Image 1: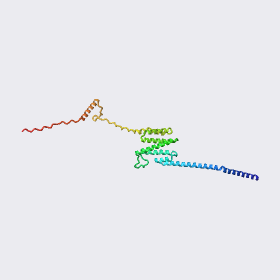
Image 2 (image 1 turned 90 degrees about the vertical axis):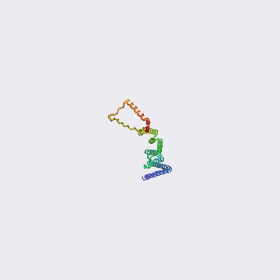
Image 3 (image 1 turned 60 degrees about the vertical axis):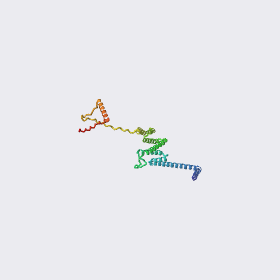
Image 4 (image 1 turned 180 degrees about the horizontal axis):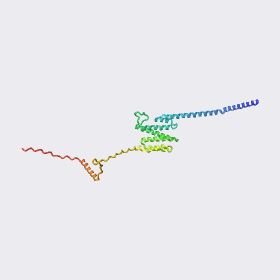
Length: 277
């Protein structure tokens, strides 16, 4: 029994020793390659996580700067700085155009205090800002058309509404009509409420070219003339009396318009003769 037990222990020791030798041999031959592969995978995972965190931080910064920007120049800077992040650039340019247009419609400059002496909009500045807003809306339309995603159509429709408002402010009926019809084509069946808004704007474009008609003031009916003697209203004169009245009035007008007759010279009395002596 003791020999059998001793033999089993020795066999176990030999097996474990063989396993250890095989493991050591594997470590010497293939172990470094596998360890290198594990390290590469771990590094890739760490790099991927770092990139995702960096991308998320950049996205958060872009949207935070977009929310903080409230004037067109700041919004343009955000669009130039974060042009590759989501739709930040397109949204910033659309907001910049809206900021110009809101200031024009209110008649107050956004870069002045409300109580400032030069806070009111001048005709020259109005024309300049209308051109700026129209250019920004055009950039938004180009960026939206270059993006095939469905969400880009919302930016395009918003910019088309902005260009239509700019054209209406300028009194350009043709351009306003073109942009409103483009809205109906882009919106299609996906945005029926926007199609209705564009149709309503199209229906009122005539107001731009021809102002609201001012109705004539109603003329109050004059009360009939009553003869104080009889208490009755006079009736129309017969035809014969009417002709006679016209002739009489014509004669009176001729008489009044005729030159006054020259006064008749009255001879002065002859001097009295002296009495005879």
